Length: 132
Image (cartoon, rainbow, N blue to C red):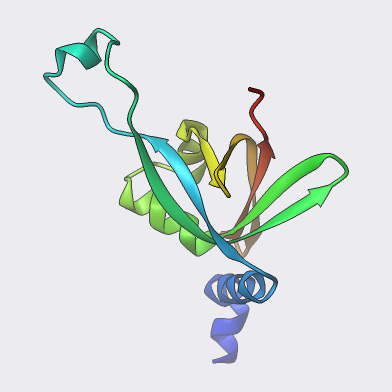
């Protein structure tokens, strides 16, 4: 058991438990919906954009100065990357429309990871509230 706790998997478990005990909650990652083939209105740009909302969690806000960051469990990010068949989490976050938290859509301006033994155990998302 001690070997597991020191491995990348063990660190990921510790991080997820820490996020949960510090008020971790589920957030929604908003992704563009896949294109529908054979739809003339969509091909001409006339169709209203469709979105796919995916739940990520646990996640915790971190605010330093005026910068808002969201800390998300690495296991949740890995699951979404695998489900949507993305090459990487970076590509996932670059493609995302944003993060929906309490009915407010935040733009993801940057993402980076904390790692242990080369494995990400959490992701940091730098957020900016969209200007309306």
